[in-house]
Length: 368
Image 1 (spheres, rainbow, N blue to C red):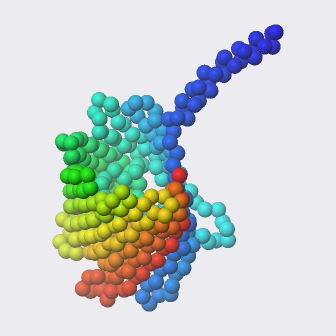
Image 2: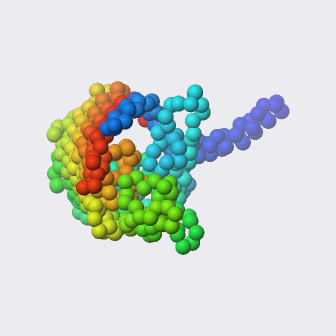
Image 3: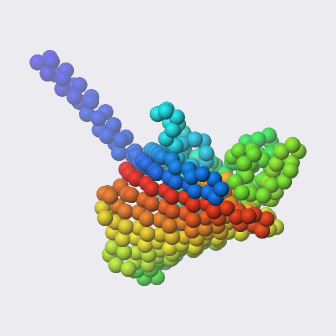
């Protein structure tokens, strides 16, 4: 009888603990993806470069209370800010994993539509269908961001974003940071048509005359000047952007998207513009789905900071132009077969001879 009483007491003690544990677990959201890539790079006057690569990302979002949450994520690859790819080489060696996300989010109930991020965060600004004219999709900036969304009628939503990113922690006279602001709207004039338009400004503090942002001797296509015994950026970067998206639903399974993005660096006197135009078709969902896309871009040498733009375009950086074609086939739910082919010219200024740069990527990707 005593044993039964003790067992009943133990059960009574454990039930609340198990219930609390279940409640804690429900506040966590885990997601990630794994990708295997076959890649071929063909560059004029150089031998073909064929390689196998992987990417793995894992992130969790935790709801702390009604107003606060936190996110933490890991990703494969090196410490390169615009790539999470890892080449398969070095005799089956262990591969590197890095902190990709670590931030706190504030979203007070009294201000619906408001979010503030503090730390190493997901990218807080709207992009033109993630086409990476200014920012690579793998970039997770570091600093503070404010995001606001407001309704302006039944068919229109407004968005405003602002951020301050800390870039390099040098001596007090050479610290680099960036402040940015963006405003725009989403409107759905009919059940089958939607539009987004916005404008952005990204201003960098202390770039002219400074060494490369990621690597001191690497400028990723940006123009340079001689500084002391080395090199530095020739210009400042104060980037003005205008972007837009037009969506059209054809039927229950088919939709079209058209995108445009334009940037002008007012901190440079020349070679300071870039643009991108693209189109995408989507058919179906999950197994048997199909996505076809194409875009054309031209990015002059000092239109954007080369260290942060699309890392695969002309091998990474600016001073290039060309086409990108995409195909994605759904193999099953959250699993796809993807192909991307780039036909680019590297070096497009008058003093450049122009180099053909082609890149083929064939992926198997799974998301969870």
